[in-house]
Image (cartoon, rainbow, N blue to C red):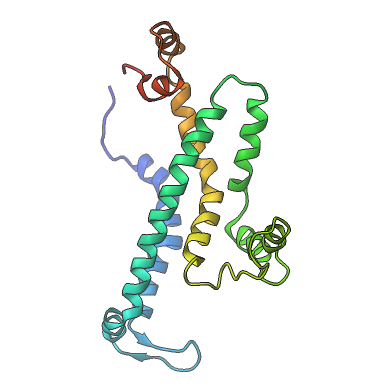
Length: 208
């Protein structure tokens, strides 16, 4: 019989996790809240201002502008990541040749750190010597000096594309796992009933 009593042995087993959480999450969060009430440049003495910093932040238009930019970035990332992740996930879940090789190649961007990706794409999109402008210029598109990250009209979408490029493999992996859970018999039944690839894609699902 399994009991839910809290015993000393269970508390001792939980203690390392609690200490780790307190040291690296709870205490830094409390320190950050305390620092938010200081008027301090990081050098010299600090002055306690209480909620003054919070009032100034909420009254600033830059806060709400940043908030809506974050919402827009989330929207574009969702629009880009889910459809492309679904297509790649379904493709790599099939039985075609070299499926494992394609799956490994698609997963590579997720292995890179965000810092490495940011530095790499900053060089690729550089308006002076970047690979993107040179490639488009070779194809006869643009003048070869597009400021991809400095143009306010396209910078947000470009950043969303970079973020999506990194995380599409993760979404594809989830969709791939879901597709592999569908019994093969459902696809065979759909083929017998005369369903085409598109109808099979949208209608074939597990009865569970």
